[in-house]
Amino acid sequence: MAVELMPRARMRVRSGLPCLPQSIPCYEKKLMLSVPTIQNGPMFSWTKSIGLSGSCNNLSSTDSFDCVHEIQESILFWFITTPLMSTRSAFFAAILSVAAGQRDILSIQQQRLPFQNGTLRDVFISPSGTLKHIQTIRIQDAVGPRSQFDEIRSIIVKSDGSQLLAINDDALFFTVRLEKTLGDEFDVSEAVIYPMRDPDGESIPFLGDSDTDLDGNPRGLTIEGAYPGEGRGELIVSFETRRTLLKYPVGVRSRTSVDIDISELFDECDVGPQALTKMRPNRLLPGYLLMICDEPTNSDPNVYPAFAYDEGVPTRFSVESDGDFFPVDMAGLSNGDVMILFRGPDDTEMRIGFVPSRDLTLAMRRGDTVVPQIILEAAESDGFNIGRQSGLAIREDPDNRVFVYTTSESRSGGRPTLLTAFEWIA
Image (cartoon, rainbow, N blue to C red; front, side, top):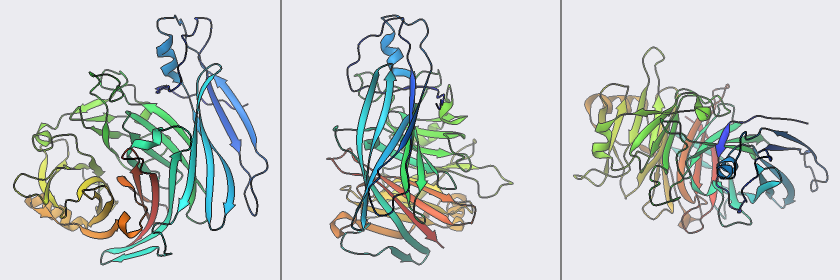
């Protein structure tokens, strides 16, 4: 029997749960499946172990609902894999245990897709370098109309590619395990969900829970340094309705967050910036937080205000993007280069822009406008499977290879949630 203790987490419970009597404890369940390697046929066997732990002390009928919502929990995805010509599909379920004898099961379908339909093209060459497509995975809820994956907003990835950390519109963090399969490809194997907490230690409400719950809708996520996995690290999250940035000093398990006061930023950004990243290209100098507003300046519809913040006075510069492509996420390399994800005006187009460190440094120093070099442009009208793009992450592995990840959210018109991986060769 395996037991894994998790911190308390606030979860949305879709099925109606009765109040629990005081004598019934709240439990954590963890279902672990050992899946054999598939060669020429479907999976025919698996093993499992279940661990139980945790309780809600002094539970009364009036606070049992909070007990159901704030429990120790773990979510695991299990796979049933079958070969289907050249496309491999995996079906898995997220097992959410909310109380003794109560659980929510989210049936999810995962399927590999080509990056562009009707072609095997997987290399995209630009003057700055080459993006080589590794894989695109479609993740969707096979039963219910909505899942926690529907509203992924921003991601970061561990340097070895084994874990991903994401945020969604419900003010939740979730860590996702990525299991290597063939070459650089991977499968999603496990996710654990944690609540975001405000500076008072309270769980940030879900946007839309009531007319007064205006604290939700996280937008951007970044981290100080490389992501070590398991939700650890100094995390920074921007919020739309709060118009603020919150720092989580020890990661997703932080009991409280710290408000980062950058009033100058919100003078030009109507809402919290969705595109942000923490940079430290010179280890001898302090790092700085880069942020780009997703609304253009009043004077030029192709210029977006941007800021570099090193805990002093923010340095203002600008980023140029034409065709109504606006920044939705960004990530930096250890040498100071930056990539910016842009989404088109009708949510069916994307661009990835590349900004060399020297150009970025010069623009920040002079307060000038930097023009990203477009290293990838794709549109659904050309057969690309891109969805409504929302997140971008970069990881540099121990062998100095660079990988780029993008995500899309499916909240708009039933669009798919996609996770795409590339290798970047400069």
